[in-house]
Length: 181
Image 1 (cartoon, rainbow, N blue to C red):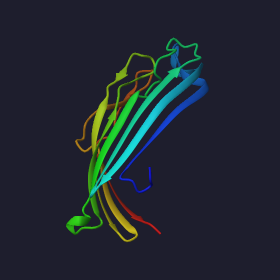
Image 2 (spheres, one colour):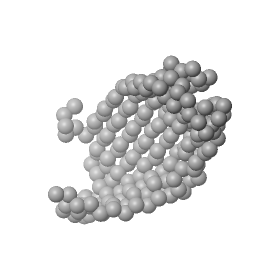
Image 3 (cartoon, helix red, strand yellow):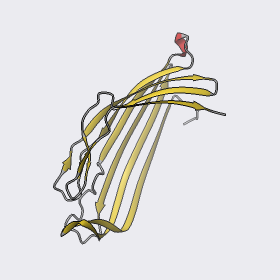
């Protein structure tokens, strides 16, 4: 595709191997043991489309992360805290045609599929979160407001094999000022 095409897409396929992976000792979760090799296979797809004042951005990832050469009872199971499926979709509008050339605003949705704690006992449910951005460019300066988890959704982000679970980040707003030279 030409660099100035209104639509672009990319794809990546990957395989990672890790040896001597550590996991909690089933006899005592305060200690770790080597459980062998893990393999992570994945696919990432990205697409961007620009039409008039709108830009759409989409991302999808599939990650199969498992113990492969393990002595562990969880051999072949998805590794802890890694969802198989994740996706995001954003729409951003530029207000140049409305007489505000530096202003842009947009919203996005992020999805993370369910994951496990590593022992197979605690399932972390999938979550869908909404985000927002507003920014204004003027010359080399950019003022931005980003709000993550716009609806302040309460969700479990991750769990460990020993049973500890953590909530995800609450609504968070970040204001930033950047200078480009």
